[in-house]
Amino acid sequence: MTFEATFYTAYCSTGCIGVTATGIDVSETTHHQGKRVAAVDPSVIALGSTLEVRYEDGRTERMVAADTGGAINGRIIDILVSDKDKARQLGRQTVGVRVVD
Image 1: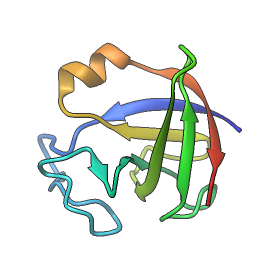
Image 2 (image 1 turned 45 degrees about the horizontal axis):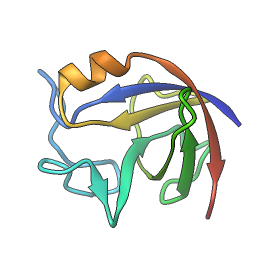
Image 3 (image 1 turned 30 degrees about the vertical axis):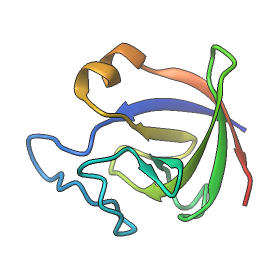
Image 4 (image 1 turned 90 degrees about the horizontal axis):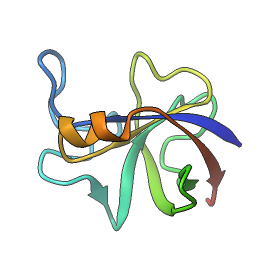
């Protein structure tokens, strides 16, 4: 499936506490059990699903659908990164998303 990818950090000026919607503490990491954390629309991808994401440059990465967000509706995936500079650098991308399990 084709998705629009955006990138986020665990902290923001209001409302962000470093814990995902599924209860994972990401205050000091971007990964959970070896997979990068991503926010999804749970009506499109079930929370807890393992995903394979293919970036525009051809790289692939395993992720876990472990978070949600108010702006994450439909085919949008918000990928957790370490800091705001990295999020800005990555911008918005069109990515391929495959649900592995």
